[in-house]
Structure formats: structure tokens, C-alpha cells
Amino acid sequence: MRLFLILFISLHLTSCEEKIIITDDIKTFTKFPKEVKIELKKLVKYKFGNIRQIIATDSTLIIKNHDHHGGKNYNLRNYSLRTSKFSTPYLRRVKAQKKL
Image 1 (cartoon, rainbow, N blue to C red):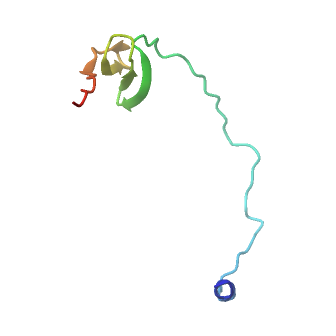
Image 2: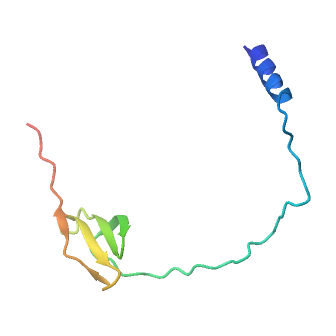
């Protein structure tokens, strides 16, 4: 099997007609043309438990909540980037029923 692979690779390499040509036209650089530093800032203080996931749609952030002990018991809440307000929570969390 090893002999077959060596034979196959060598035949393939010798049958190539186009060769790689390195020219002086290749441009290289050591620094990007424009470098911008990103400053992160807090968008809003979230007081409804712990955020598990954020989904961005248009100007709304859909926030999936991870709140087991906060008493809210809701999974989703929207945050509007236009109005900077939270929606009322929706999709109530339901505890799994025990099987008998």
C-alpha cells in the first residue's frame, strides 16, 4: 500500500505541467493600512438574572435568561437598542414533570 501511494504521488507530481513561479510583483506589508482600536462600553445593567445567550435582530436584542433562583422564571426578554428599554418577559419557564 505504501509503495502504491509513493508511486501515485510521484506520478502526479511529475505530470504537472504548470509550475509555480514566484515573481517580484508580490506585495507584502508589515502593518495593515488602517488600524482602529475598539472601545467596549457597557450597554445596560442587566438585573433579571444571568444572560445565557444574546440574539441580535435589527435593532432588538433577544436575551435568553438563565435565572434559576431569581424568581422571574422567564426564558426570554427583548432589549430595544432604539428606546434602550426592556420588554416584558415572555416564554415562561416550566419545570419538568416527574415521571411516575
